[in-house]
Every structure is written in structure tokens, then in C-alpha cells.
Length: 382
Ligand SMILES: NC(=O)c1ccc[n+]([C@@H]2O[C@H](COP(=O)([O-])OP(=O)(O)OC[C@H]3O[C@@H](n4cnc5c(N)ncnc54)[C@H](O)[C@@H]3O)[C@@H](O)[C@H]2O)c1
Image 1 (cartoon, protein in one colour):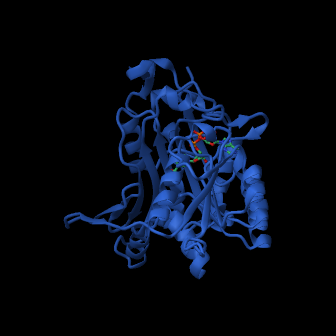
Image 2: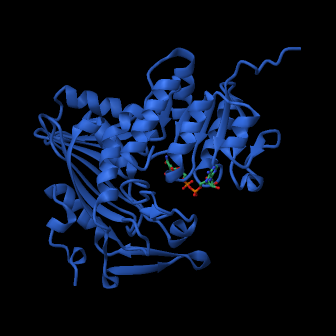
Image 3: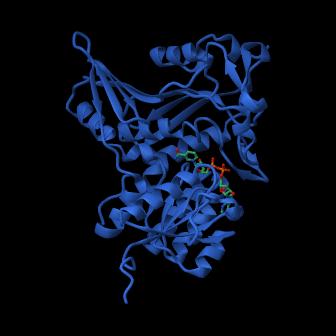
């Protein structure tokens, strides 16, 4: 008897703990709907993965997984500094790749990976899931239709919280460099990287050459090497500047957003929830909610029909140029303890809150200024 699922694409997930658990769940969802089969996983800790059903092959590494059989799609949800090597191996073996963000830790790795993708003919989708949202298309259309007048600036913003345990969960967490390799695990390049990537996508400036200059302004409140509170200005080719102001040291979690400022109004894209709020003076706000295409489904559709990817590797040049400027900049400024409140959490955990950071983020956006240009006491060296 022939296997009725034999024509359904085989998907493997590499890195199954942490964020990888959501990829396992999504692959299982696609399997339940008959669009894919989760055939294998790879992780040095694959044996501890209770969320992976029995019957799914478990391997300690991607090499072992590929030696046992090449799936149609490899989903990579591993530490940033492993991305280039693992994605290269998967494509060389003949698999399409869904690669978590940030795609690579350096522009040289991105160029090499793009060359591998072109040579092998294997597509690579990058895990900026906000780019799967139709909210993005909506904002682009409103801007193109002139609903906001002339665009005067793009912004990326987010106020999140990350407890001490987040920074302690893995050896690479909060590192700029690990064992001589660039890791780039700062707020702008990892947890709130979506804000930056989505702002660049809304602006239609995703190529390396679109980034003319980057002025990073980085701070750290936690005991980490990388930045956890940062602002940054990107000068873009034939476009207004992009300003980013983000933190992981807020008092409570706020919805991150991309903001488009125009001469006639403003659009705020709450990219994590697919909601757009358009404000034009003299009119009530227009609030729209949008559907989202999952990036795995989008990649499977691409394999089936050749339809363009929503978040292709080739569209991450500008993001990677900004990431590179951040990783090459001076280390983040250490915020003095007197500006920080230590909030105890259950289980002996702790969150460090930078007092007034939400107001600082709002001010940075409204004045289109970096934190260090705002005369904030915590930005200064004593
Ligand atoms: N798109 C999003 O919203 C989102 C959210 C969180 C994390 N991420 C990204 O997902 C990736 C993983 O982040 P995380 O926070 O889950 O990391 P993590 O360190 O918590 O987990 C990484 C997992 O990969 C495994 N692993 C490590 N090296 C491996 C290797 N060489 N081969 C196979 N498995 C390996 C680990 O055992 C672990 O299971 C990062 O790129 C991160 O930026 C994306």
C-alpha cells in the first residue's frame, strides 16, 4: 500500500527548546492540517524534549539528522552564532531553510549564505514573523496613497521586560562576542529586532546599499555585555531617517510598534498583534486588524507554487548592515545603579527596571532624538 503522506513535505526542526518549541508546535499544526510532516528534530538536548512526539526521529546534531535523510525543509532555531554554518549545511544537503532571526551575525556571513542559496537553488526564509502580516501591506498602501501626506520619519519602538533568568538561560545570552565569534544578542539585534526589520520593510529600504549611516546609542542595565536599552538613527537612501528607541527594562510590557510620521498624520503598526492605528488630525483614529501568514506555511507555498517569500534572506541586507554597526560600535554604556529599581520575581528571579525609560522612549520618538541627545541623567558617565 502507498503511504498517503509521502507527497507531503518533510520538515525538521533544529533547536527545539526555547523559541524552537513554537516551531515544533507550528510544524505539528501544519501536519495536523495535512500540509507538512514533522519527521525529525536535532538538538544536543533532544532527549529532554517532551513536546516532541514519539515517532519523530531525534538527533544530537544537524549533521546526524542530514546523514539519516534530507528533509524538504529545515527550521533553524539555534543560537545566532550557529546560524550561518547550520543554514549552509542544510542548503548544501538540498533542504529549504526557515532561519530564525537575526539571520547571521555579520554581513560577510550573510553574503556567503546568499551565495550558497543562489548556487544550491534552495530558498531561505528568515524568521521575522511580523513580515508575514498583511498589516504591513496595509501601511505601505496607505503611505503610497498619500494618506499621511509626505513621510517625514520612520520609527521603531518597544518597551519590554526581561528577567535575570532570561539572560542566564544560555551561554550566548546577552553576549556581543562568544569564543571569538560575533553573537549580537542585544535588544536591537535580537529581542526587539522585529521592530527594526519591520520598520525597514515598511520604509521599503531592505538592501545593504539603502543604509547610508548608522548612529548607535547603546546602554546596559543588566549584568550583560550587550545593550538592553538603546536608541539608534539610520540614515536611509532617498528616504527620511529611521529612529529606534527600545528597552528591555520597562516597568511593564508595552506593545512594540513601527511608527510612520507624515505631514498629514501618523500610522502606528503594532506589528506583534497585526493592528494598525492611523491618526490624522480632525478625524477619529482608524484602527484596523489584519491577517498574518505563518512563515513556515509561506515557505511551503513557495516550494509548491514558486510564489515570492514574505521574508527572504535577500531582504535582510539593510537589517544586517544596522546589526553590524551595532556590534562594531563601542560597548554599551553601563547605567548607574541609582537609576535602577530591582523588582523581585517569584523563584528568586529579578527584573531590573530603568526608572523613567518609557518616558525617555516616548520623548526620543517625539523629538526624533537619541537618548544621549535628550539630556537624560542615566545616559551620562558620572
Ligand atoms: N522570531 C521570534 O520571535 C524569536 C523569539 C525568540 C528567539 N528567536 C530566535 O530563535 C533562535 C534561538 O533562540 P532561543 O532564545 O530559543 O535560544 P536558546 O539558547 O534558548 O535555545 C536554543 C536551542 O538550540 C539548541 N542548540 C544550540 N546549539 C545547537 C546546535 N548546534 N544544533 C542544534 N541545536 C542547538 C539548544 O540546545 C536549545 O534547545 C535565535 O536566533 C533567536 O534570536 C526568535
